[in-house]
Length: 464
Ligand SMILES: Cc1ncc(COP(=O)(O)O)c(C=O)c1O
Image (cartoon, rainbow, N blue to C red; front, side, top):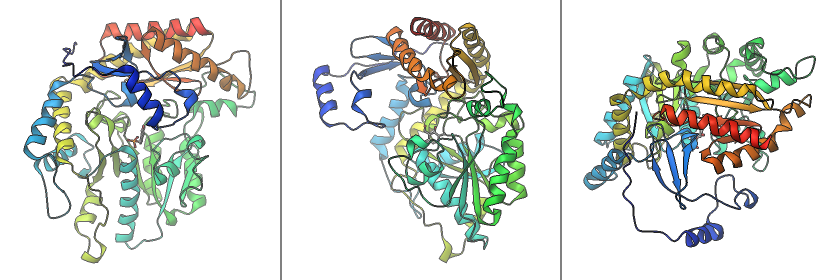
């Protein structure tokens, strides 16, 4: 599959001037000057590749931030935005008003989501989608006369965004340290986590131990019971942990979570911000295990990042509850850009591309080749594990000479070097500690998959 280059060069920018303005004024996500000594200035994207200001090309190994599912340079999406902006760039979608793209996109999303779903609330990001999901869960229980059901159980190592409540659900302490205290009533349980399972093994680390050995769902249930299910509104989890280091769960994990949620009358939120829209070779991640959540958070791939959009798709039961609420208990949740016509028009055009080019199926077909090629890296002594599902994968670097936590932690500096060397050779992956995360666009060609694996393997060998 090829994507025609579609970039129309704009006025030339002065690279030095951009870098100066950046250094003097721009505060970046995860800002620290030592990580920004030599920033890459991207000027163009084509299919699965990014091009920098010096004309160097890079395979976009993570679809930027797991989001450019249909690849870069899609003029069709720019045209959809321009056409909608010319006609009606924005109008409020607050109650009493509607616009065509928002309503039609809601219907389209319900069609591709799980069969139990019927209503959609739009946001502009993944974190805001999760914030909205938490509020919807609390709202539902208050409507049901159970106002004490307010807590949210998430998992350690999960990532749900970094606005205050989303950060409180996020189970990566690095995102908490300088922003505590967290929001009360957010509780983290143990979740599938490869290193931890190994580190806690009786005989020190055991490389590549299957997570199947642990009953993580039972551990989560113990946390839920200890908190008191009558105080818990929802469990939130990513179908496959992404930012935590691409951790696919044991095969029976999600069916168990569904049963636990039902047993204790707690809602189940699937955070599909990464796993939605074909990333795993299905429209949504839980299709792999035949499980339906009560709420589904989405963002990223819904527009393939061409414009910001996110939201929550809810089950018929929740939707009916919202629709049937008495006037004094109405859904007083809102955002200026909920149902933004231009963002929704771009999402509709993005779904057209995914369907017309059968990209969900393409991801399912490409994934085994992608993972098989990555598996060859296991032969390298510094590669402790290769794992993934669909077009999401991780290559975990280790220090075979160390034991305990050092087996993993010692490899983090190596991972930094591998990242820099990969970039020098034309690949942009993403790191999580000692783990190299990969999730290239669904339009990545076989040749690009080959090149990606070759570059990563060479970078590991050159720096190990
Ligand atoms: C699973 C998951 N949920 C939520 C978010 C937060 O999305 P955003 O950065 O759009 O707020 C992310 C971002 O990477 C994510 O991976």
